[in-house]
Length: 569
Image (tube, rainbow, N blue to C red; front, side):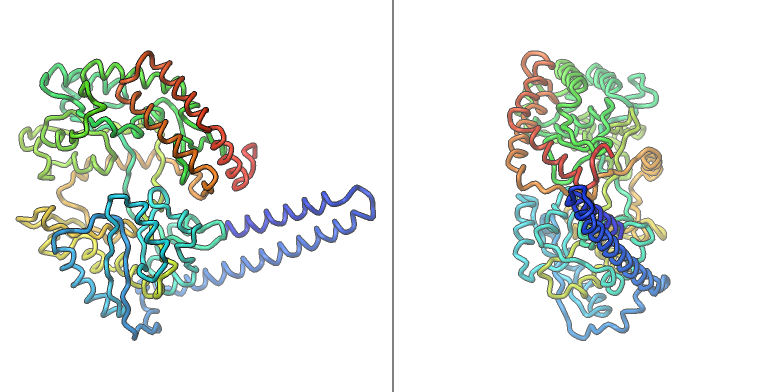
């Protein structure tokens, strides 16, 4: 609704401006302009009234959903014809039979409730994005429900390509009433509307997760290093590494692969140094949003911080934090080394830390060897309390434009998202085989369960739901809840999530820029550059400019100005 009104007002303003420009200042030419202005105002008023009527109708329809029985209205829907609903997700297809066995049980319920059978289709991780988009582009009726995301699965780009179906408000209210009710209560539907004002995506907005990166480290070792409160800065991390090198001379503290952690660490250091930036959907090469609708390349803007980063990484390399041949190393597994007590850190996101901080996770061997072991997390941006909330469309649901049964597909989705029995089957598996209840909201794995052999995997990153979900009893929820509360106190929303720039004219240049960024940030992150950090950064910036970074910035800035209004406003 908000976008529709903005569009109406912008149209009116543009027409009025054009009408005014048409006159030359004399009386004869001003009359048509006045008439045009009056007509435009009337049209805008009519459009606004129509929009208000539509919004009122939507609110009335939403009010008819029974909060105690949202599916009561389904009694009037004809589901006599059995249908097959195809679900597309991104994950390697499970090799064990447990997912198929779970689906047999789930489909018994779906057939009883909505006369539908759900079939799973997987896009494997190899070349996943290209294969995913190719599958969606076919629009041949082989896909109905689609797991998507705005930041890593081209959600809005596929809307623009026509691969995803518009989902009218009334359609969601009728066929996915429980989902409509919850998302509406959270006030999140506007984030799911494209520039035409229509909904195309359903958000995973009732699931708490954090994918911000940082260093996972041994808190007990940090205390022994004199960091009683743990690691909370890059300087603290230097102190921690030096302690580990002195205390465990045979250890490589961070046995990192040469190509990994580069983007996360570089961006993380810049955030810690004070750069408050926001990712822009579909835009890469360090080109980000700053405050006040400003588009900039952080690798050009944050010169001093980038030089300081290079100097720090050079010192870590000289200390022996990683292998001397780090750029050629491609076989190390820092997470496994950390689990086994052979490594001092693992650089990854908060969700990974939730597993490593938990003594109940049997994969964490170091807890078995040292019951007093503790794990901390130094999150990037912590020094400045700068953290950007994850988009509610980081996990989302779309309907393929080729779907032959979109209404029934929504009914299936509403059940697997909101019905406790369906949700727990789809997420955790069969009770007693994949999980057992510990209490009303906690589960644990049954005796003899082996994740690689018994896990159910549906890659359902499109509707996870804390209201009906269960907590894993093996996780350290005291530590997790404490960190999440810390995040909630400082996190800010990305103001540019509804800005979807068109990249057709700049995609080739961005590819070239990305290669330059990868090459130079790899050298900086591992301290492997020749000469000084100042020289490396200057060469890096010269290469970016020569490849056209300023043209890309200007292109995206112009689009942002058109979308939000000029930056000065």
